[in-house]
Amino acid sequence: MNTAVGRSTRDPNRMLPDDRPVHDWYRFVLSFPPHLVRHCLDRLGVTPGQTVLDPFCGTGTTVVECKKAAIESVGLERNPMARFASAVKADWSVDSATLADYADEVARRAKSTLAEQGIDDWSDLPLLAEDGSIPASIRTLEPDRFKLLLKNSISPIPLHKTLVTLDMVDRLGDIKMRGCGRLALATGLVRSIGNLKFGPEVGIGRIRDDASVVDIWHTRMRAMTDDLQSLSTCNGAYAKVLQADARQAADVLPPRSIDAVITSPPYPNEKDYTRTTRLESVILGMIKNLKELRALKKEMVRSNTRGVYKADDDDATIRSNTEIARIADEIERRRVAMGKTSGFERAYARVVQLYFGGMAKHFASLRTVLRPGARLAYVVGDQASYLRVMIRTGQILADIARTLGYEVMGIDLFRTRLATATREQLREEVLLLRWPGRPEGKTK
Image 1 (tube, rainbow, N blue to C red):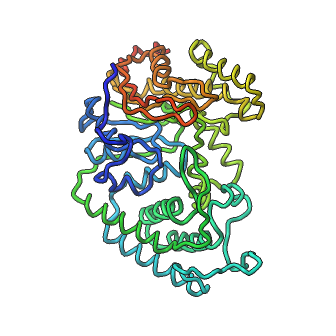
Image 2 (image 1 turned 180 degrees about the horizontal axis):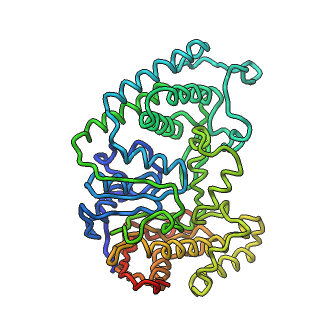
Image 3 (image 1 turned 90 degrees about the vertical axis):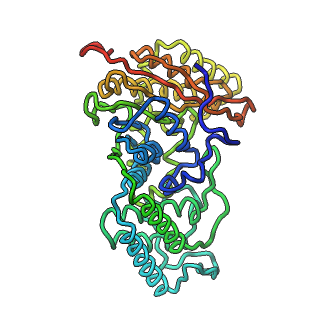
């Protein structure tokens, strides 16, 4: 089945203006759009009273849309920043008026503290010494945390203002208000305070020697309170987000508890999501040193060479798959022919095998938590990131799922996009599966 899905727009992946409430609190640049989740809910026939799982929850698009539709949901996400964002976005129990008061008080105290230090939140005056050195009164991160940041991802004065504001966020209010405050600061860091730019990968854009922090944060908090006020009469369903590895879903979810899956897993495309969220993860203290960063990467499906380790063995699960072996061999053949010898380039073929092996582990783990007849939708895309070798992700995942007992209902076209390297049109698709159920002891 190859039907087109989604709403007809110039860019089907663009978020619609009416979908900004809650979704816009914090969102990956390349997140799949809320209207696609609504399409999948309809396509899979999901109704209130059923439970939807998003095992690659990201920033919570699926759980928020389910909550709006009064459908219970569970999300799994290993990245601590993304999991935190999803959990805050899925909790609408915070009183909007109380949150507004909290935001006003945090902003007042943060500005007062900065003023005592001779710093105006909107000041354009240089605060660094003539030789470019940083005054001792300007705060920064401890060395182990600071060296995790991408170089120049935030300038010294905005970082100082951010740390002062974060202190006030954490000092006032209850845990839920502090969660909203931290999320608003994370979004401000990415969009307006730091020096990041986003394309296929995160990088450094225009260097801001100074930036307003408190007022940017306060504006985002008021947007949150407005959204919560507009949702005060909404019958939001139960939503839970767990920090967990999608390859081990059976370890954290009850047997036969899930009616449907709607998700967009990572693709084998060299995108490192721990870099995408690095600035806010480090400043908010979710990753404190290199050891914690490596531990995090090891608990994620491998989709880029920065996350490949010598002891990885997910590829053992798909060694009999001839198409994956063919792709890996072709990548390695081209690497040798082109004289590519760096450590990253040598790992290209392996990361593809590890990716599909990890997804096979994920599909296998899901089988005990799905109810018989459960339907699944995976938003996936073709890739040519590794030496221009085409990877038909949806077709390969369909073959893997079929070998594990799933029924393939179809592969629907969502959109096409132009490959940067090859200028070839790549398909982004919705892989549709059904779990028929298996007698106990016969799921392998």
